[in-house]
Length: 358
Image (cartoon, rainbow, N blue to C red):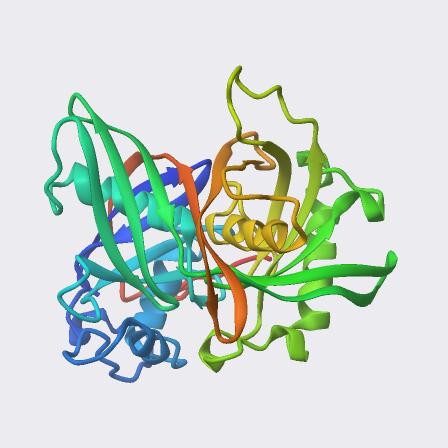
């Protein structure tokens, strides 16, 4: 395999490994693979994801090389830069994790906004706001990048329209019957108040949180509530959000906006723990809170993570999609570069393309 260069970021503690240039199909084969050109012209990013997901494809092998041990770990995350759907976006991206390719990734979108401006891929003023438009498998999203005196200071992730699929869904678990809400925020999430099962969102509870998150995901993954109303490629429970209500700090004097404070952990794919407050998960939570009347226009969701990082969520507008009331969420955070790498594979290495222990 030719060497593969990456640039790594973290958003709220969650890693994001960016592969700007894919190796050629011939050079990228690392095991017995089939040729699947995801950069072919005329494809949408959603179609490129379907090609990449084919077992034994070059890109699936490359995903495992970069994500699995010994070059990554079970909770690694990243993205391959691919052509956009059309000239309306700056680029496209295929998001990946240890189990495959996801439909959306808010923390990754925030990291990509920072990367695009810091590398000069998208020109930005020294002080101001720049829209980085990105095609992802769930649609077109925007990373609104804020700069001050030549430095990126924050990024607003403007998600796809997000909506509730079902509320109060009964699920039998090892902790008894629970009731979850299911919403779409670029991916489909089941959501449960952790207090209802006696848990708190703290690092010492991570094993129990993972176990419950996986249990809920697989109990619902093939159910009707896990079906996207228009695109079956977006179906399936991507993750479980376990949340807890926090006491909101007092609003600033003269502020008309309400502040909702919650902490959450998203257990996504098959047992991966999002260290950040989860961007697409925050979009799904905003949809749930808006539908219940808990979150109004002008309110802000202060969304904390299991490691103490925070996103700020708000409702940009309201709309209807697929016959459902929906919101256009905005999630604000920041990403920081952690390093650059040049990965290689020794053809004699028997552990290629890698392994995970969870």
